[in-house]
Structures are given as C-alpha cells and as structure tokens.
Image 1 (cartoon, one colour):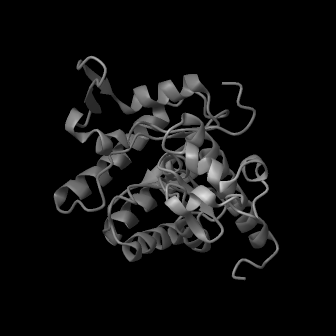
Image 2: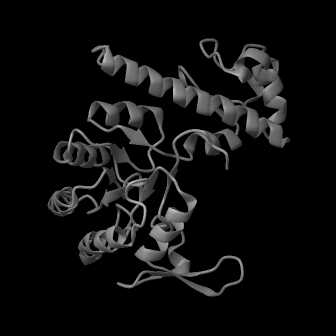
Image 3: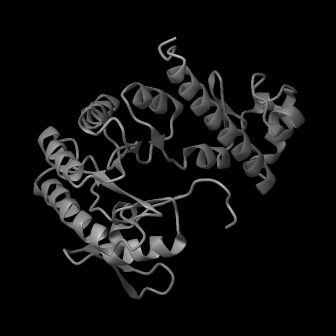
Length: 275
C-alpha cells in the first residue's frame, strides 16, 4: 500500500452483523456464504489473525462475536463469553506480537454486568489496547454513551481505548470527554457520496437547490484544498452526477474530521477541553 503512517486492520467480526443472512456462527468460527460465488467460507479466530499478520498492520483486532445492540436475551451473553474464549485463540495465533499490537474488543450489548465481565476478562490478559465494540447499532444516545462511560472507566488509562464504528462529530466529542482515544467510521465518506459536507455549523446538503447559486466555499474556516479551490455551486453541479463530486466532498469531510481530532487533542494537552 505504501501508506507511510499507522495502519489498523479489522478482524471480520462486524460482518457477522452486516452479512448475517450469509453467515453461520459456531464455536469454531463464522461460515460465510461468499457474495462472489456463493461457496461457504470458514473464518476462524486463527485465520483472522494470520491474515492480519500477513498484512502487517500496526494495530490488529481480535475476532469477536458481534450482535446488534438492539438484540436481547441469551444471544448477547453467548456472544460475550465466546468473545472472551476467542481472544485466547487470537493471542495464541498471533505470530508477530513484538511488531503488531493486538487489541481485544469489549462486548456485552447494553447489559452493564455483561460489559463488566468482558472488560475485566480482557484487562486480565494485559493486551496492548482495548476496543469498545457492538455500539452504534440502533440504540439511543443515552444508552450508547452510558456503555462508553462504563467501559472507559474500567479500562486502563495508560493504554489506547478505541470506540469502534463511531463517526458523528458530536459522538466523537462526547466519547473523548468520556475518556476514549480512537475511532473509525465510514460516515465522513459515505455521507459525502450522498452530497453532504461536514462544516462548522453541522451538515451542509449540497443537493439543495439553494446551493446552485452559492459561490462561497464549503466552510470558510476550513483550509483544505477543496475549500480553497471550489465553490458550493460547483460542487452542487457535481455531487449527484459525477464521481469527482463524491471524491472532493470526501476529501473535505476527512479533512474536517482530522481538524476536529487535532483540536480535541490539543485542547486536552493544553487543559482547555471543556471550553
């Protein structure tokens, strides 16, 4: 890839949710029906780690058993305990522990007791970092933030705490206040493909007719290449018709999220986060 910065790879566990109609989950692993040719494919914790070892990312994720946060009943407990059993298989299969950092993922749905059992089990294994998984799946904001607060409080302060699948600017600000360090999400680029730009005031809908005669940049406070060179009107003509529209708005949205992250980081170091 020739990417000269840090790299993180995921384990494939999320596809147990997103491709559930194609997957069968057992103690051995998850069997997928290939979306390419329909043939069954087994992904075990060992397979997941071996693939990530070959890719060579700086941070690799354990294979976990993921369920939607809206799921209730014994399936949530089953998935949490299986996640703990699988972490030991992932640790045993990890052939490059001195070069790659294996993160465990806290599961347990919205149940505080299950979350505590999982995070205590992972902390006992003394991993390089920890992720909070299984959120942003349809639960309310209060429930989501409560789980993040519980997990960050129970995880070591001297190791990275990573909330998976979180990308709304407000969520990142709140989760950072609660003690989280890392995030990932498709939101900035996915919303760009629908013609929405992230700006200081919120979200700018470039598909609206009013944008056709708006010759301002996307965000006057942004210094990215797109805001320096292109107007809202020009981007309005592109976003629903040309791939270049999605690419330019994606570029801006990623720049916006990186600037937000830099601002959060510097405000913490300088002791002015609340302001």
